[in-house]
Length: 619
Image (cartoon, rainbow, N blue to C red; front, side, top):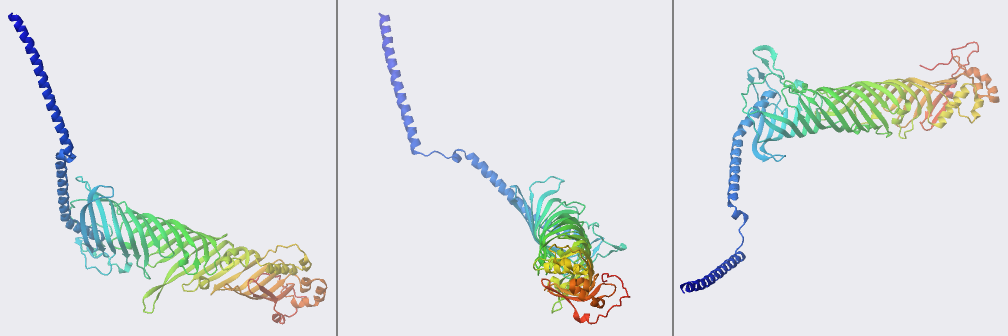
């Protein structure tokens, strides 16, 4: 009985226990569901926290880093300001020791800035740098007097950027120093105050490159890769007017103990005006006389307008090498002028030259030691000088008047038409032929066109001469055939090539060519002439004598010649068949040949038994 009751109680208890678990589970599920609904409601009603609120430690770390950087920048800025006076004084002391001269620097500042390559570093800037010509220097130190006159070097501004990297014992690396507004004025040698003799060693002087006065051990050293300058100006004082060069760009590299630097420069040449690209080396700098500083390198001269010189025109290009000092430079190179011309006429001819020259910077004069040139098809050589002429104005102040040119010219393989074309408006020369010529050329300065200022004096020889005018050449052919006693061939339609020669002395001045003893030879005749030819208008004014192999009757021929036989003895002279006074007048385009009857009246008959010499060219 007890077992049954107990077993029944367990069943009842188990049922109640299972029911209780169900009740507890359902209650827990309702609580969980209510919690989830409450959380969802909070998520809907409340916004989500930001990244920085959920990660506030990052904000504090970043703020600390920025504060540290700001503090570092302020510290470096304060240090830079404190270093400025030291560097300012150091720059002045170094330049004074290097140039043995007074140096002034208006301002110098340092600051922190990001460089061109995004790297933080120190940015330095200076303004108003002036260096005067060298003053008295003694071995014990540097004596600098008050600045006399204009500075030797004037610089408007310089700046550079140095990265924040420093190794103990190593120089601070400066990739580039930029200069703006550089003005260099080299005085004449006579205007320089040379260094005083060393008291310890009488009779000696401090030379360029001598030991510099001690400045004390520097706190830091610098290494500069390059210096770049824009808007520079170089003036070289001379005994006449100064030489001025506008330098648009210059880059200098190779700074070392030797004092020799390498450069690349673009500058504008004043006369003839054009662009020069030069590369080379400069230095070491000569303290006692900066004009004696060595210089050497290569150059390229482009787009040089010869119209800068009055009377000539064309665009010249030149390449070559130079070596010497800033005052006297030896130049060797080539020029090419494809459109060379005399501006009053306009006929263009190509001109190519190879030359060796010396430029004297103390006077601005150029000495042409050797010029090998080709004008058109003509080859010639020359040497001489180009001198600048100085005159005064109404107030007596010096001013330039131009260049005086004096050359000795030798044309060994020339063509006369090349030179005559230059003085022709139409480009058609008076005659053609092979030319050999020796002359002295002089072109004085002045406002007149070059063909009126040029002066020539010399002698020439022409071979295979032919006139470009058909009428003139026909008259020459007629003269040759009649002079040989062959007048019957004049009616032939076959053109006969007449080989003629011409030689004599000449003088060109004021645009007028004077020929005092011109000898013109064709087969059968020799013509001796003297007279003038005007370059501007082409006017001819010549008189002379034509001596022929044939007599007058033979030159006329036919029945007229038979009638003229008695007159032969009146024209026969000096062994020639006939000696006839002639004149040539008119212009180059329309010449007029004729017999001078007035001079013919003075001719006396020659005795048949008095033979004379054969006709020869006049000398």
